[in-house]
Image (cartoon, rainbow, N blue to C red; front, side, top):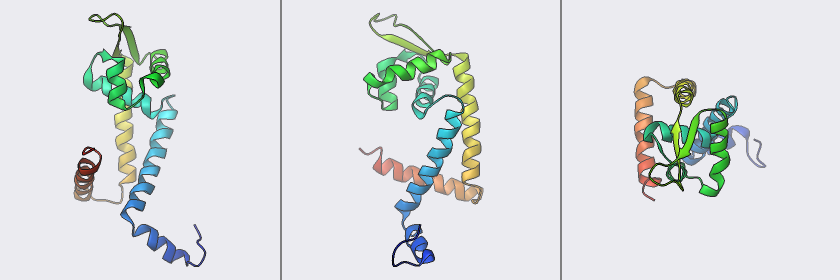
Length: 154
């Protein structure tokens, strides 16, 4: 990116001196790679969120899932429809309240989650290839600290 009045190296150094800029650029690159990985499987980040939540929660109802992944319940039906069409989840009437829909992850859904975790770890390895194991651990610990003090504090 060439800026008026700036030498290219000076502009690059100015941008990379900003932690926020670096986090945003690396986050965008990581998101791009994840989106491509998911799209190759006909999935979106919301689909992945539902699968991960179900893998952790077990059987639950649609409203709890939408809250867990941060999707407005009115926008969630197409997400569930896609996952059900791919046989990654199953929806049934909730035994306790027949007005609610219970959602479970299928064996194929669990296999997909496992495969995405492995592939995601490989993406992380590529992204962090320039760091030693100790540096990766330190980076992760620091990012968790920032996350806890900003995102989780809200």
